[in-house]
Structures are given as structure tokens and as C-alpha cells.
Image (cartoon, rainbow, N blue to C red; front, side, top):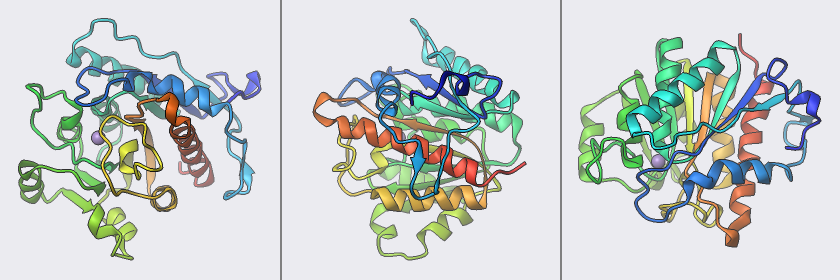
Length: 285
Ligand SMILES: [Mn+2]
């Protein structure tokens, strides 16, 4: 954000931004590995003062970690790296926010969080259910992100879902720990935020696939789908989440920077700052 340098040190900062430029299995448009840097670049234009919260949310500091380097790692090794790095941030009592990269990386963050917070659940904002057992011949596809993450958690709530296979719908039906709030339903249901919260435990990991939002708001993503959450619907949900639950960590994934859509990167950067603002507003032991 171009914060004063004394507000970016690791020790003092309560929030840690972790760039995770992992991209291996993107199926449609490529380039999500450039997402973290684009969000960081755009963050320099984000205003410190948050008009909704009536304060500046950065104090006492936000630390940006070096990007994880994957080299020629396979997916399993990559997830182990993500788990180790994210886990260290949790051990140091930071509120970690991973920037992707493709959705697969969530499984590494969730593995780390679940080992430290028993009874963890996931709130997923996404156009896709990501519940496939395997896709394009690999269980480590972005299309399998939640299926992988379910190994570690008790409950999962997916919101904004509007692109889903028969296999995934059947899988979700057979698993009562999964709540899918379909996009076509939430727009007619004034209770949708309540329903999302009801499906979660007290400790929550938040994963935001940027394609959960409307593609006219964020066109710069690999697999855009019509429909989705508006900016304010998304913020209302996330605000209610931080107010009512302890959010232990978060990620924002699947931004695919495009020079034709710099608004997308800026939206993502603003969203990350909103997460930080809500986190600060509702401190929980
Ligand atoms: Mn996804």
C-alpha cells in the first residue's frame, strides 16, 4: 500500500500478506500466477481511510512476505511449502492473507490452519463448487480445491456457486457438512447471509475466489461465469462473517491480471484491505 516503512516490519505487524504465485492447472485463460504482484501493485492506489469503517485500518502494520518460490515443484510439494509458510505466520500470531495464484493453494493454507484450530470450517466465495475428485487427470486441479481442503475441516459453506457438475452436486448432497448456497437462490433469499453463517463452526478460514463476484465487476479471472455477488453483497457477507466468527486466515485467488481491466486488480486490492479492516474492527482473542 506504500505504507510508511516503519508500519511494514514483521514484528509489529498483526497482518501478513503472503504472495503465492502458484499456477499449474489453469484450464481456460492463463496468467493467474501474476495475480499476487498485480494486487500488490494496485494496493499502492488504495486509500488508507476506510469510509465505511470510519478509520484507517493498517495500524499497527501490514507485513508483505516474500513470494513463495516454487521452481519446478510438483503440486504436492507446492502445497507442503504453502502449508509450512502459512503455518509459520499462524504460529507467530499473524492474521495471514494469501494472494493467489490458483485455487489449489487454499488446501495448503487450510491444512496449516486446521492443525492449529480444531473444529475449523471454510467459507468459500466462488462461482464454481471446486468439489471434483480430479480434473484434467489430477486431484490438484483448481477445480478440486475444496475437495482437497475438505480433508482437513469439519464444515464447508460455498456461496455464489453457479457452475457445478452433476458429480459435485451429488457429492454435496451426500455430505451434510457441505452447504452450497447457489447464486440463483441467494438473490431471492433475504436470509442468505444467516444461512451461510449457520453452516460454519466458530473458527473459520475464508477463501475468496475472485470469480465468485460478478464478471462485470472482475472480468480479469481465468474462468468467468455470469451472475455472482455484487461488491456490496460480498462485503455484507464478509462483514457479517468477521462480526460473528473468528476468522483465522484468508486467501484471495484466481485474479488473472489483464491490462484491459486494471479495475479488476484494484477491486482485489480493495477487497484485501476490507478484510483487514473487518479483522481490525472485531478483534477476538
Ligand atoms: Mn475456485
